[in-house]
Length: 173
Image (cartoon, rainbow, N blue to C red; front, side, top):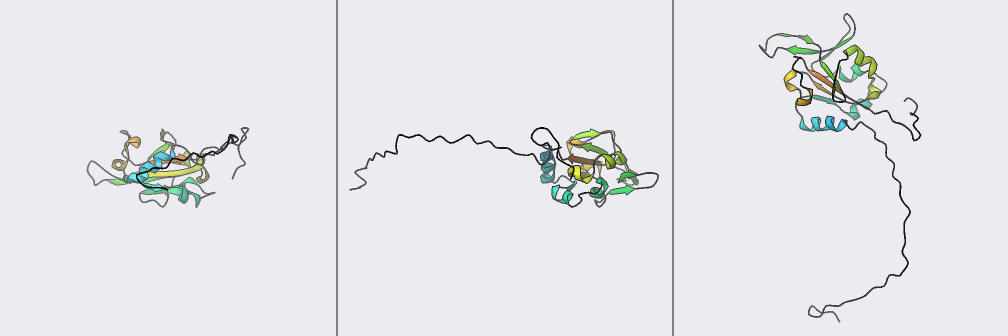
């Protein structure tokens, strides 16, 4: 008989046989670069850039890098005198001078010396995980600041090269 004033104690015998499960091996594949977390952090902070994320990039499969950025306000793709990716420039010192300027490119968080034409050849849309575009120098986050540039910046986050077990790269997409 159970009552609040008389607690009940019970012993339960489960058995003396111990069951051991086999070791479980877990394998995972990193789909995007670890650096893409920086892209996502900047995107969540909404610090004044335009962002082309993995979902948007997927729509441009098989196309060129310039296809990813040409629709972003402030970005111009030029074919005059050779290929170039340019940005609209508004002078920060007087606010009145306008023109086009060459943005600084960053690849996986590191400042790049590549030109727009070289970026176009080296990074087709299939190899890009995300893009950040800062059309004005004063909109760049700290990690993309450059005292030598008065133009905006374009940060490219690449997909890692995936390897199959045994070291062989998968066939091209």
